[in-house]
Length: 633
Image (cartoon, rainbow, N blue to C red; front, side, top):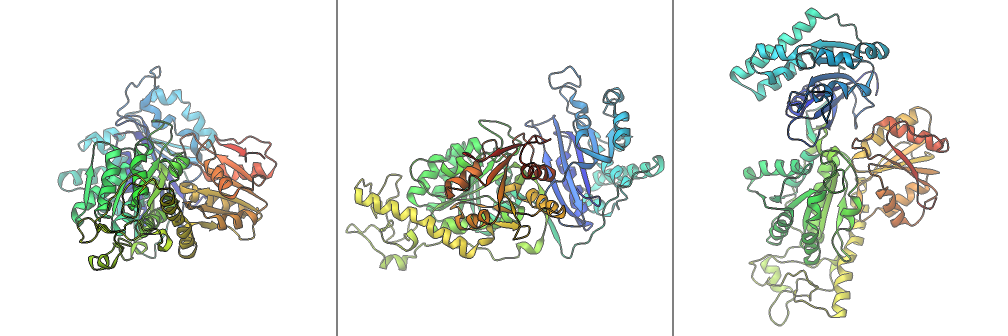
């Protein structure tokens, strides 16, 4: 984290409006010309429980959360189940203050709501002593009283934003504009009054001695603030998807909700069904009927989709599924990020199954690779899966609006017209040979239900060219080899037309490599930049193609360095295992840096992991990460 950036953390209880307040504040910072990146932390409860959102704002592009933060707005938890220290969960009322102090940087600012957080509890934290040791600037403000003066207690969030703006010399113009967009009438006027009252109160009553100020910046073009969930949903829309079926499950629900809200205005259909089996099966049926269709879930729900996924593979019905990882197994930690479902997604469904799997690492990649997933799925009549996690799902960053200025792609792939069907192969009964043996790239043209001359059978059993169940050995070999060869052709296409799926950073001739996948890409990129600034010779790669695996690219990268460290958020080094499975070597070159405590990596943790590895791996990391050599090393 550099000295010229603001990292603002707002903390409270679930239900206290932390998410909405932070999104509006992030938009205000973005509209003022800054680059922003947010990180969201929340418990698995509907109401109550410590939650916070972090906003990193700078005059330069930021791709990850920083190391700690420098401004805390602690609202307290107004939904605390039992505000007593001896309660099972402790004194939840004060947790938005007490549980955030360890990450606050030296010289940082603390604003806490003394109207909700009891002064005796603050004294028990030894806050005054700790503030003196760390150079913190503490501003107790009765945000609750300010809010009640103008109406409802929930408006203490607005008061907190006003206090923040005054303390960092931030103009209120963009905050006011956002409030006016979201509110009207008496509610808007009351919030506007409390915003200015809080701002003026700070200016009148406090001697502001800290150095932290809001950075100044300017954008060359209009920006949008998007999460990975937004990007996946918008990518699906622009790819021509007009059908989605699902069942709510955190954190996949965001994608489902966004598409459900948008589809009615564009002739699309969104169905919430009784379970995930029905959701995936419904999407397979919609695709069979000629729609571009999508479904998805998180770990436990996606497990139920294994059977419909296998049906789509066997019937060669194109479909896109999304799998939003969270910490497992079983229910695990539903609202915490982890990259523990990779092997599950790659190999779920029985038999020698084939699917395409993309793991986008940024908001931009989430949009592009969702569109690509649809293109590949419908061109090759194969399931495509977009795998991401709670981190990418919920984090917001600014993206130029022009990034999305591209043509939609409603094409259904190799689907025949009735005129083309008249010339296509049919058997003696008149059925269309939907599953022909000898086809280009393994893709047999398909018809849609209701087309004249397009009748065939679609079954989950192995089948003949017209779809009849067949256990003939020769037919099995022909059909199996035809389906399997699709992945080879897809890999060739990805290498030729989409090499940017893998993102490289750092000097090409560096001696040491850091490899990651999915949402850890941005933080690794920042760590690589820091290491090179410190005089180390390091480069990195963020890999998105999980299946088919980018063998050529990865061999070239690993062979070009003396050693490589693989960074991922799981306990069993799943991506490192995939690399060694696909390449069959390099065990003596690979080391894992693993984190699985429910929090994403910070750049400093990766820098430290590199330094320990280079120094010989004797030291223990200071944070909750684990360094592990490759199997057999």
